[in-house]
Image (cartoon, rainbow, N blue to C red; front, side, top):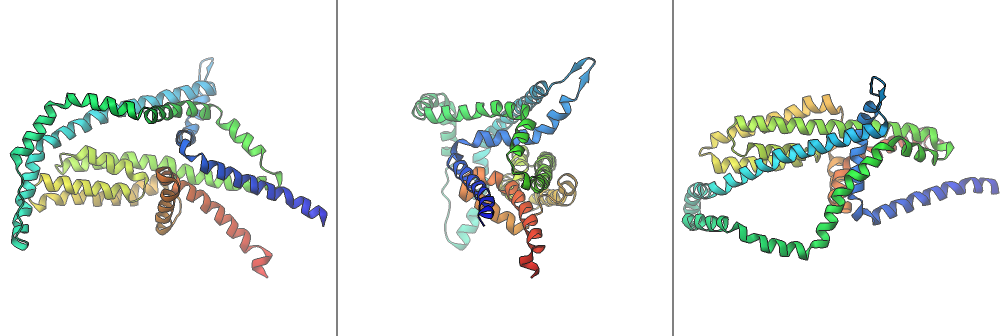
Length: 359
């Protein structure tokens, strides 16, 4: 009797240790953002580091550290290139929108005011000349905003410094995670009780397959969908095609969010730009074709069955993740849910083969 209790005691200790780790993780969540970001990037980029570390050029062999540096430089270069391309483009589109805002307001008034006057007897008193004067005045005095901006920076200096530190911390943590990835995985594996090791290894391999399919495949889908939206909306004549395409495509990592926000923004921009409802139809065609392309071609090809979660479970996971952990929870909701689903499948199989179920 005593022997059985002693054998069970380590199991309880491990459970308590795991619960304690989760509590500490939850309490430290406000400072975990750079570490979680670096861990996700390291998980995605580790296979690339593995491939580069096996390269040989003559007698020169690529070490793990050199391969990590190459991948880091590649990531920094891609980020910098996207920044140089996207920021000036968005600035140009924003300036164009500000310049044409009075025309948009006039067109909106011409369409809505007769309807309001007919049904409710209400007219819109919008002075376009005054709006143009206000825009021109603030545009000319934009330089005067520097002083208030500096005051705001000085008042919120600590928050800004913390944000910059977190931003700079991501590449530092990412470098060490990529360089020591396999060593850390082995050290974690050594802590698993030997009686649980085989089963844990099987579950970990399944989780790795699901997460790899989701993360790497979803990234490819996001990039291809952004390109499709940009080309399609540009062909449909939408002036804000590129900003809308970036929002709709890059927000695709959250199911239903990217297409919903992108469609609303596209319809709003089209309503302000076009004069007849028939000109909005190509916008709807682009989004309908995008959903067919993503659902029947890109997702099955690049992601497979994704993470195998029911749509209701997906919605619940997103809401629960956002409620518990904010935006970080939304980002991690689906991968974590997929990992939990793998564990639940194994627990179900164990239960169905147990004496408790069979008797």
